[in-house]
Length: 68
Figure 1 (cartoon, one colour):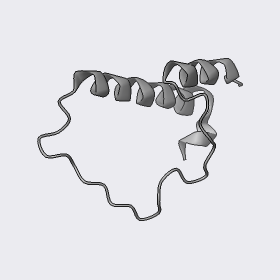
Figure 2 (figure 1 turned 90 degrees about the horizontal axis):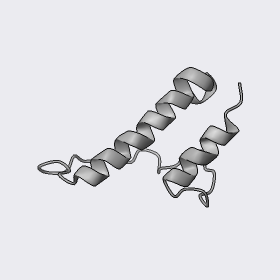
Figure 3 (figure 1 turned 45 degrees about the horizontal axis):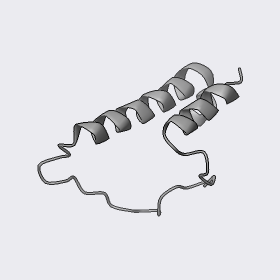
Figure 4 (figure 1 turned 90 degrees about the vertical axis):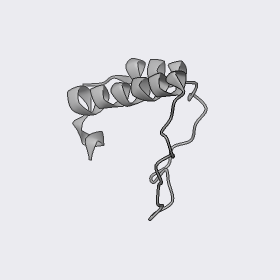
């Protein structure tokens, strides 16, 4: 199943149409630290949830090969 249009819309919605493909988007062994008090910006929280939700839909429903 191909979802090219969905992927293009998802990238455009999140202003990511000019991004470059990377095999590993982060440095290896990078340690992430939780923000003290957490993120309180509701807009950032919502945008993050929308991005993750869109990727989850792709990975579980249409493109299981990107889930791993």
